Length: 392
Image (cartoon, rainbow, N blue to C red; front, top):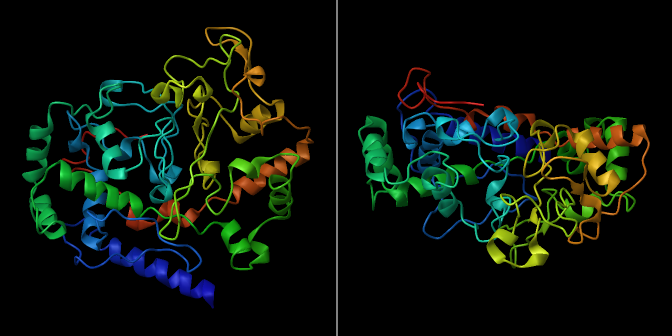
C-alpha cells in the first residue's frame, strides 16, 4: 500500500510538470509537490526562492537552453545528460569552443540535498550562486557569458515563452536577470529527486525480488568493515554530505583518496589540489567532496578527474589503497600519500566479491529518474534553444 502511494505521488508529479512538453503552455503557479516517499524529508529551500510548479518548469527550459551561453552552443544540459544521471560521460567537462575543463561533471541527482555542490570548493553551498560559475566563470570557460550578461538576458527576453514564464514565476520581479535566472535554475535542480532504485524497493518497501542474489551479497560486502565503503558513502544518499529540512545542521564530507602523490610528499597536480586551493591548509591537499553513489553505474568515468573508466577500476584503486602512476608528469604512489584518509587501507577480495559489490552498486540505478519526462528536454529540435546546442 505504501509503495502504491509513492508511485501515485511520482505519477502526479510527472504529469503536472511535463504538461508543457514541446509546447508553450505555462503550468499553473501552484506550490511544488515533492516526488519523494514519506520516509524522506524534502531538501532545504532558500527563503528567497520558494518552490512553485511554474518556476521549476521555467528552470527546466533554461537548463536545456543553449542561448544562455555566449554563442548559443552550450547549455547546462551539455554537461548534464538525464540518461547519465545528469553527467556527461567524459573524463573532463567540455565548454564553449571545445574548451576542456578541469573537473569531471558531477551528477545532479538529489543535488538539492548536498551542502557542498562542487568537487573541491568548500564555499560553494548555494545552487543559485553556483550556477553563476558555469555561466560566467572563465577559469576555464564553460558557457562563456562573462561580460555578455546584457546580451544573453536580452536574447532570452525576446522569446515569447520567457516573457510570459518569468512574469508567471516571479510576479514581483518579472524581468530576465541574474536574480530570476539563477533562482529558476536552482528550483529545477532541486526537483531532481532520485529515490526509486531496485535497492530502495528492496530496502524500504520489502520487495525481496527487487535485488539479485549477487546484489544482496554485494550489499553485505559494501557494509562490511573489511571494505570500509560505507564510512564515506553512508546513509540514504550514499555520501557523507547531506542536508534536509529536518537536519539540525548540514553534514559535510571530503577526503583524499590517494589518487596522486606527485612529489612523494602528498602533492596533487597543480590544477586539481582540492580544498587546498581555497584553504591553503596542507592537510586539505587532495581533499574532494564525497560523491553520492546513487546511479553510479551510469556516471562513468569516475573521480574528480575522470581517471577511472569503470567501477572495477574504482574498486581496484581502493583495493590497493591508492593509485600507483609509474611514469609521466604525475608519477607517484598515492598509497603513500601522507594526507590520504585513514579509512583507505586496502583490502583483499576475490573476483566474485568484486563482481557482487558491482552488482550492488548497479542496483542503485533509478531507471525512472533517468527517463522521467518531468526532467526531459522540453524544446523542439529546431528551436533556437537547441539548434546549435552541443550535447554529450
